[in-house]
Image 1 (tube, rainbow, N blue to C red):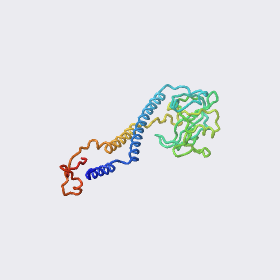
Image 2: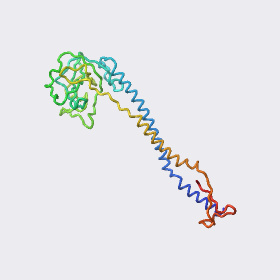
Image 3: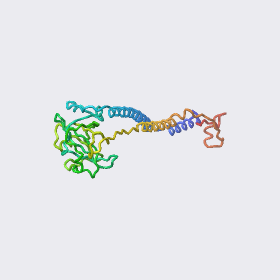
Image 4: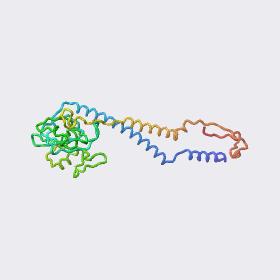
Amino acid sequence: MSKTGTVTSKADRTRGKTARPRLWLTVLSLTAFAVLVALGVWQIERRAWKLALIDRVEQRVHAPAQPIPAPAAWPSITAASDEYRHVSVTGRFLHDRETLVQAVTEEGPGYWVLTPLRRGDGTLVLVNRGFVPTERRDASTRQAGNPEGQVAITGLLRITEPKGGFLRDNVPQHNRWYSRDVAAIAAARDLHEVAPFFVDADAGSQTAGGPIGGLTVIRFPNNHLIYALTWFALAFMLAGKLFVTFGGGLFRRRRFVHEPAGGPDAAARRTGSDAGTIVEQA
């Protein structure tokens, strides 16, 4: 083999090694691309699920009120199949066993008033009668708003909240409540045969001087489309980088340049009529 061929092939190999990315970087880039695409697809699926949930809840909230599920059906009640159903229940309030749960509403800070309602069959249902501000925390300030006889309540079926509030755990022994944990409240108030859910009373069930009902907030954040577009955009940018790295050479034109005869390495490249002519990537 001529000196020219040897020098040229060594230069080509050196240039190829320099331009070619390491294997681990290639694998990492392809893995990252696949993960970004998968995250985008997952957010699209989450968006479809969220839209279906919103539609389902809207139908439940605006449907005619139906009696709460019978005790036999209580073990099978779930958030997916039952939460926010428009329900009705009748019975007598046990005002001496009410529980105040801290709340922040459109009316300001204060408390939810959860009162047991004893039904005709002896079972109990916790009813969130509504909101009272801090200055009306003491039950003696709202005695006039506590009905004593049989009442009919309509509202939304809600699932128990057993994990406490945001960064705050319930402290039953000190009567501090941050979430509507049905089982814990029942144990603290010595209540038995209690439904595993509670009912948010609507505005039509409130009494003069009593808690303000109908403040249930039904809001489901739905930013999944924005998240999906973000993941897909990142995947697109990474794909562009991969194309430049791996596919750019396919579109490079080969051009000829002439190196002066007196230049470095000229002797090594001189081969007859092609002396001084080399091939480089554009």
